[in-house]
Amino acid sequence: MYSLMLIGVGCHGLTAQQTAMLARCELIVGDYRHLALVQEMAAKQLPISPLTPALASIREALASRDVGVLASGDPLFYGIGRKLLKEFGAEQLVVLPALSTMQEACARFTLPWDDMKMVSLHGRKILHAPGLLLDSEKTFVFTDRHNTPAALTRQLIEYLELIEDEPLLAQCRVHVAENLGATDERLFSGTLAEAARQDFAELNVLIVTRPPLAAEGIPVFGLTEEEIAHSRGLITKDEVRVLTLHGLRLPSTGVLWDIGAGSGSVSVAAARLHPGLTVFAVDQHPEAFANVKNNIRQFGCYNIIPIQGEATEVLNSLPAPDRVFVGGSGGKLSEIIGRAADRLPSGGRMVVNGVIGATVAEAPQCMAMHGLQVDLTRVQIERTTFPETESGKVLNPITVMTGRK
Image (cartoon, rainbow, N blue to C red; front, side, top):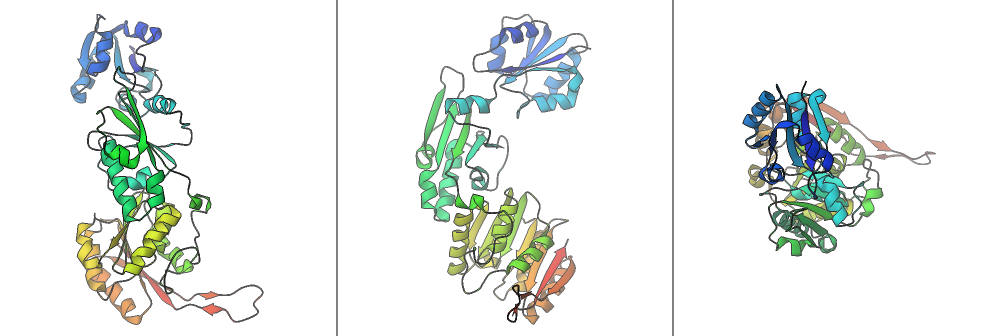
């Protein structure tokens, strides 16, 4: 069996060992930058793009001779290696990696990377960049021609201005490495505002850093009413919040609508449990909108997007939800349930919490009319302390109504 030599090209070109292995190959495949390194070799040279015919040529050549594939850095780190493993198997693949782009960039900026989050936006459409880029103190980003460093930093600025987080806006830093290893290599470090005004070369990687957050020491699950900013007691009680999250069966990624968000306590709990989830917290009241933003800042829930507006006027502009929680409806419960249910995918879930009899009567019927299977859980909560020296505090009964599509 002949071998497929997968060669990682580093900033300093090919090593002697890599060159010797490539000299045995009948065909060498790579992009134009890497093929320029082997143009003096006798092997036939072929562009790796478009990929499908390149794979067919590799398969044909492997029947009679070794084949080489050139890739940047470590080809098993967000590179072509995964595709070649799937196509040809580990038995036929020989890998000689170079330092990854992430290692090279972090070395340039003298940033330890063992605790760095890594995100690839290459060829991806993203819903909410701040939720990805601010989740950790240090985030390494593979960019592309659409998700450029300037475009991403502008999104960060817009979001931090929306949630009124001036300290974080001032303290975030951006590092961009352009054309690593080339003669026109350039390194940039600066503020979000400075990065947003830059024009960067197409070949680049981005690192976003932010200061640590006090909330990172708080347990992910179990925030109490006393810790979450709210007004006039308008908050989903701790015990009910647990039932609500259980009913939602949140996915690790996707979209959650929190309608009538109030304090945003359900949004905060969901966002902290699943940082990959994008949460839209909708409320028409300025006081609630302010509380949601306060809680985003306090707990670092940058995957929450606060929206001030009447639900029936804003829901059509939101991405389709995977999960919906209705904590308040402003008297338009049936319309809200109808609009949300119609946009839920198969397997989607909706939870409506009801205290007053009218809500408990209307919500299940409306959910069923829109094709949801509905379960009701009625709870009465009494809080006491030990030893019980006085009567416990009895909370208002509540019905948690869960609809499954």
